[in-house]
Image (cartoon, rainbow, N blue to C red; front, side, top):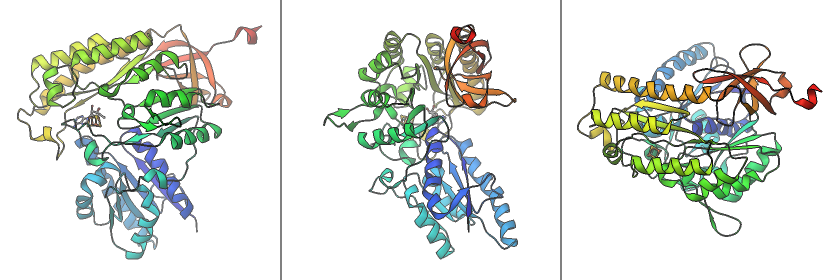
Length: 449
Ligand code: 5AD
Ligand code: SF4
């Protein structure tokens, strides 16, 4: 009998990619996608542990899912509950204890074992836990997935050895691992042949990527991007997330030379204060970051920059906050994410003196938001009247409306026929809003004539 699977994803793009891979692994067992948890025989929560709020969602969602499970059992069927992702990795034992109705806990390095874990849970009728870091890389054991739309995500690197003092990723995702170049290029070719127009390379530390190329030399991300750009059908390339320490000249040169590489870079800085950056173990200064930005912009003058910021890190003073605001003003980010520092169990910063009160963190966040939003709106407004190439991605909320992305990753809505989805269209930007744009299809002269 056909079974149904519902996957709920929290957190980063890596998790979105992993969720699709988990569905691929379970497809041969007869699991087809379900629209809702109620309609499913198995639910996977793919969780995020990066901040406390993200983590808490796991337990409240599990409570809701248990009610569905109990209803199903009363009606003579069942619901298999699996928790995956970084909360599973970090708090596997705690999940089994606090939520004894959970059947499977599986860490990010063990997804390829899901079929076996499902079978074991069914056989044993008890809970199974898989959170070791296995010796064999999971990528070798995962089946191919097809792109869901014109944009495909391709994981090239995983894990992180940077150990920023606030961050759980090195503990939940393990140490840095790059996939072999040949496997990545083969996957990119397959995705392109299945209709992917844009490929986004993913990694927790994507620009730390290094792998042996067909020429026997070690390739970095810049070289890899050039190779993927040569694949027919691939029109656009992006990559995320990068660390300032690993941004080498080859990658900067790729931004200069490679037309398919989109002029957008997410480069988290976290703080503008050297004292805080040192306490965070970021191993770069504010001046290092500004120098990088200058280099990038001289390679590609229209490059749109994005970043992550943390306010209220332990010991952060008014002068440190001001340094962060100054850096944000100096760079003029096209968009950025900012967070209140959230102490994570097991990370060094959680034990540091000088923890900041929550209401003070909120005030600091508000001040930073003001600067970041002002720059984002100014950046968006500069687009009005310009003609931009947009990849039409999906239908918009209103009938007849489509949504796509500009080269600078801005969301843009416009009126257009559904057959345009998956195609590049030339749009004239008609209006700028806080986080998106409106546009209209630019009438080509040859069409008008
Ligand atoms: N508290 C707040 N923000 C955090 N981030 C990572 N760890 C924490 C934490 N403990 C933010 C960083 C990172 C982004 C993905 O999440 O800015 O770049
Ligand atoms: Fe976390 Fe720092 Fe690694 Fe980014 S570079 S994943 S913030 S430890």
